[in-house]
Image (tube, rainbow, N blue to C red):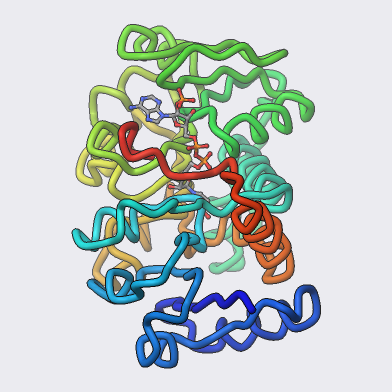
Length: 315
Ligand code: NDP
């Protein structure tokens, strides 16, 4: 029998949900909790993790692969220097993850255009003040940094909803209906044509602190910023200055350098910022388990699943 150990920081109940879903969908896969896995470390085939305790993965000596509960793998590779880098580290993927992210981004883009943060503040104070907004999706260019599995999906969704969409990635891309830019040389023209900037990059040494004053001030006047990548991408003091100086009209932030966002953070109460608690795209337990079952079947047949972390690229 194949076994998978589960560790999800801050959510002890997640193990029970994963176990129930596997029992229904693939009862031949045995799901074990983390303590049981560490007690019999030579008997666990796979691990599903979110922020595993540092050093634990290396102790599971029979592992064939590690699954990340998220599309990002920085919670393993950037935190645990002893993670078993010789094993495939597989990113979460699947249709539902893409759909949820695309919906979140559509909501966030419309919210920035319509000034939804201002409505919420007015509602808190029971203020009835009509501010007319005549700008629509058709007047806005959305620029997506990162055209991977999630960025491409979101680009198609936003484009079908009436936004002009352009994207920036490391290597050249051809995507129908999307103007694409790549590499260091492509960044300036990409930013110069963008009204709403979306960060959907992985967290790597090359992308850390990429969203700074220079980038934010290069957007079209009155630009907005949406971060669903990672908090490490943003120089927070530069973001706050750009908002306070009116360089940016709005920001929607789902990810932060420190999560939960510390109570003292000025972002919480900023009148131009919408904060969400890292929930842009959290696929259901069943969607994730179905994806894992597909990957485990491939691995058991000796095949390599698609979304394997590439150590040389860093994502
Ligand atoms: P992918 O690995 O599929 O795509 C990454 C994209 O970023 C690629 O287009 C890649 O370029 C581009 N990229 C990487 N490095 C650079 C660079 N140095 N310069 C320019 N472009 C670069 O990632 P996903 O789409 O699956 O996910 C992206 C990120 O979204 C995750 O790493 C995670 O941080 C975040 N995320 C957030 C969630 C949330 O709920 N907030 C949920 C899920 C993910 P190329 O195509 O040339 O390789």
